[in-house]
Amino acid sequence: GKLNIAMNGDMPMTQFKDGVLSGTDGELMVLAAKAIGLEPVIHQMDWAAEIESTKQGKVDIMHGAMGWKTERTKIMILTEPIYYFGTLLTQKAGHNWHTFADMKGRSVGTVNGFTLVPELKKVDGIGEVKLYDTSDGAVQDLVAGRVDMIILDPPLVQYVIKQHPEWNLEQIAVDAEPDKYPIMSTKYNVIFGVNKNEPELAEAINQQILQMWKDCTNVK
Image (cartoon, rainbow, N blue to C red):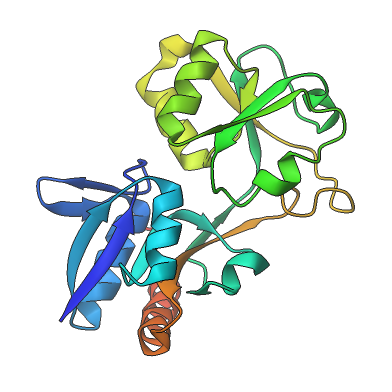
């Protein structure tokens, strides 16, 4: 009767506050759980730990602007998408960096375990790839000038910009080069990840996601 859910607390996608799971992804997760008669039980952890916990069956499902990629299908069941976004470069306002060539000789930060990490490391001439345990750590280093640009979940960055305009940050969409960098040049399918030993749960969640698209619940 319970659904064990892993989340990392990155707003505006997901947070656990006053005993309630909320945020764009979090609210959709709660709606899906309740629709199939399960009580949400929340487990907050770092992103990499979310993946391992779901893989090992310590939780049933994970979420938080989670991207679809082939490698993940080997360790868990990936649901239908709940929404989409692309790759944006977060930087101090005024640089106007918007290409992969702009990464040459520069340091780029992102979160350990994010979909784009292997491809980011292969960008031609990239100065350094810095991996962080949390999005907050990456943002703080950008603000302090310890990294040139970061790639995080676009909704989170827009939330940061709204909360802290004094940080003078902006995010600009990267010019696509699908032949060289297919993952960072595509539109991300944001999904939920389900423990591979629970196919019935995954199918039930998928049915709720399809209904959310039909009713435009995800848009709301």
